[in-house]
Image 1: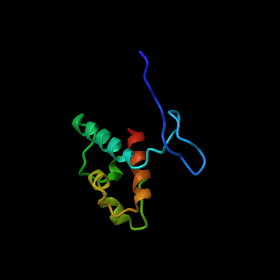
Image 2: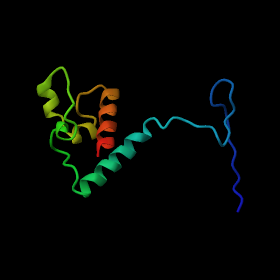
Image 3: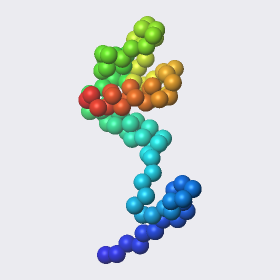
Image 4: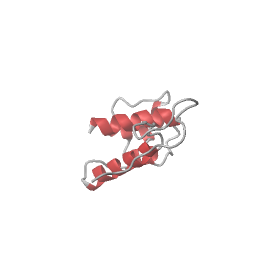
Length: 98
């Protein structure tokens, strides 16, 4: 079976897009991370409403009391108060630790 594949446009100012052109995944990783976390929830391996420190004991902030209160649900809902890249790195670390 033959599949027609072609790229259109430019990846940057000079490089044309081809079927082999790679693009960053960017915000799509949020969906994959949420699906993985919910699969872990269904499997009984995590609880979304306990401190993230239960799964990542090294998780810390300048304000340790606030760090103790942040849950996996907060991270998934972008409600932890963390700067977006900081939260992203902790969620990735969490998923890799399981």
